[in-house]
Length: 272
Image (cartoon, rainbow, N blue to C red):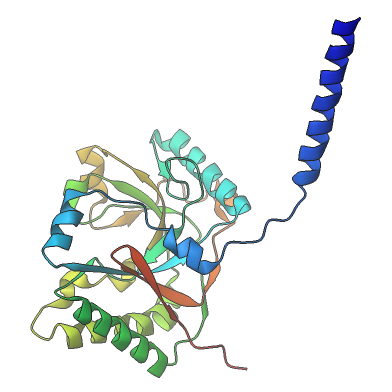
């Protein structure tokens, strides 16, 4: 009887614990601040290349726009990736999850990696860029993408990586991103007057947001898609309804990665 009582007692405690966990699950956890998210956004790096550049006085930079996906959007994007893997016999890995399974930010690159000779040169560039963005009166805007994801192969074929991307809509490119890119390019020319800035630029026509990648891509596929983008489906109408739910978000600031930190350049308040 003692054993029976003890077992029932344990069962009651388990039920109480489950009820408490259910109640706790309804608690609304406050969102993390932008500063905290930025601090832990960049993955730790022990790269020899990074250490060598740092020791040689190279100061890195990178300009981008970030998109933090919702749980619902991640599930929809993952569904698309699974469908494409099944049809195309590929092994795409989503970029909106880290290797440990936690959510990761997606981004639109506005520059290549930038290398400055001094911290002051780098800081001068970001101050100049912020000034030009505000002078141009660039205000928050909505980013929209083409209706279907496409393959994208970087020009650097040594990477052997094929990406699945959403390309920014042409109308948004011309009306919103072109003025922003002009500010970036003019700032680069002033900071690097004797240097060709082509190596720092990103082609306006190729602005995109990568959602998945395929590592160790066969050379045949890399050569096939290099220097161009292509729909992964031969039939443009096939599964079209599954891709109609697209990422869309409002850009209120641009992110400037500074070695292991992030600088935010806020766009002007919307006109009222």
